[in-house]
Length: 338
Image (cartoon, rainbow, N blue to C red; front, top):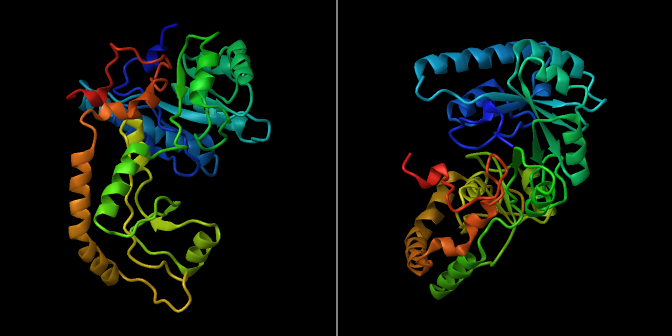
C-alpha cells in the first residue's frame, strides 16, 4: 500500500507529537519548515474561537515559506481531534478544520467512523491512534488512512505493548502507513555505562552506579517545596539536561550514557544546609573540570571501534515513517551529508 501523497515528500519521516498545552502555531510552523509534520491538539486553542485564528496563522506562514523557498517547501501540518463523546468541542472544532481543509487529522480515543467521511470529502487524510490489535482492526474497518501505534513508553494515553510486538501483529493484516514511537524505557547503553564506571573508579572518584534524575526547565534552581517533593518521591539527582537530549540521540540511533556531576545539595533537602547559588556551583565545576576531562577522554579511547556494534540503531527498525521494517537499502537522512 502506497503512502498518501501528502506524506510522500517529507524531509524526515517524522510527525511531531501533538503535545497537550505545549503545541501551538509557532511550534507547528517551525516543525513544518524543518520538513516534518507539525501538529497540535485542537483543544489547545482556548477559547474554542481561537482555533480559526491558529489555523489561519499556520497557513499564512507556510504559504509564505513555500514562496520564499520553493526548492524546499514546508511539510504539511496536522490537528489532533479527541473524538471521544466527552469532548463537547468536537463538532465545533471539526467544522473549523474542515473549513480550513486541514491536510492531516489525527484522531484519538474512539473509532473515528463518523469523522472520516467529512475529512475525505475535501481530500484530507485521517491517522488514528491505537494501542492494541483490536483498535487497529476497528480503525481500518472504519477507513482510516494510517495508524499511529501508541506503544509502551510513548507517553500520553500509551498502551502496554512493545513497538516490536505491536508492529509485528498489525503487519499481519495491514501494509499501509504506520507511525510508531521509540521506547525510552532503557535509554542508557549498558556497555557505555560499564566503561564509564570502570574509568571513573580508576581515577578514584566516588561514583553511584545508578539513580533517577529529575529534569527541570532551566537554567534555574529548585524551590524548597520542589526539593522536598523530589526527594520524597525517591528521586536522586536534579538536572536540566537529559531530556530531550538523551531521547533525541536515541531517535538518531545513537547509544547514550550520562555522567551527572553532583555540585550541591538541592534547596531544603538537608536541614541546615545553605541554599545553593551559581557561584558555589561554578566553584565545584572548576574543581571537577580537569578530572572529568580525563575521564571522558579515556572513555572515548575505550569505546568500541565499531559503535554500531552497540546495537542502538536496532531500536529504529520499526520507526520508519511508512512503518515498514528497515531494509539494507534504506537511507536515513542523518546518515547522509544532506
